[in-house]
Image (tube, rainbow, N blue to C red):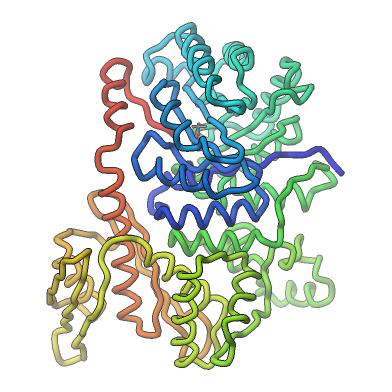
Length: 529
Ligand code: KIV
Ligand code: ZN
């Protein structure tokens, strides 16, 4: 047994802040449960003061999880702390994550506070938070660009006022691994509470230079006892340290690190896939650990080597992370029991109602196709979960197309009790359907990305469409599949439009925005990273 490293997952907070990654309440709860089964110690479920939907998501996750601590993010503002407490108080292990920026740049241009004012704010808000919380993590935002002497003062103040974890964010992904490791080593050597384990020393690295995992690993080597990660590395800008990269780095190079986590590695890939399906954010093919190419060998020399001895070109076994080369094929004779077993293997947990819908859709597809592959199942599950996004539904569509006429489409959409019908022409049937949807929804969009591929194999494979829509200067991902590719395209488009509707409804004018603009007047602008 090695030293124990806690995994703090912020997929639902920092991860969800990345464009196109927003999830519905049900999807967040589903993801939180999957992360808990995966074995993470702490789940940051959101930023409760930022909107009613964020508050509700954190509250629901807090009420659901059994073993993981549930954290809400909060600025050094009393109202944030009150609201975060209300959101997490029903958790088995409630926790607060309090932050304020400490670097000279942020102090001068964002906060307009000097060093002593920052220290005062930390002391005041930790004292205030202690009435509610036993476990409090404190983060000096932009720590890696903060003067080391001041950073030490900040940490000592936070510990003296009750912080039980100190998190060191490399907020803008600026650090280099050697440098970051040295910083962590210095903090451990100067702070007795880190040496004794009375206070956890955590790190939170962003990936702007592609070094988030390298910096986090350097920090573990230097003595950090917790690492903050997101699944699939989603997060602000270039994202955060990817959970799977950290965990597999520690595993594959156990000889260097000799540390343990509670992560159930065989759930890594299925959980990453679940997140991919819920958000529609694709893995690039060469993405470490999860990409399609990672266990594929193209060159003859490599193929020969792998056949002779797998380790010649593979440093990990795909089975370790739950990637199975030969999928258990499901078909029209597979019953509910087999489907349940399959979903269980992939750690997909559904409510009875969701399971029933998945089963019905599975049975329909199994009738049309000889074999239903795991990829088909993933897309059925994500359609069913995606279908829980409130918004437009499409009871019917028609297209006329051919090489001698102008393609046209007519669609009917329903939102709540309203019906909308529109027709439009286009360059092709897909374009015509998209134009008809725009007319029904009175929106202007720009199609930033459109990918169609077959899932499963054979002529009867389902068409899976993944796309990215820009609406009002924001990006929204959409994903759907069907044996009819025009239908798959229309559903993926609607999926993205519904994410926009959801975001508009929930985040329109959040309390935090109001509060931030008030604060901005007094202190300059502030945004979380
Ligand atoms: O990147 C960052 O600094 C953050 C803090 C809120 C911890 O996300
Ligand atoms: Zn961050």
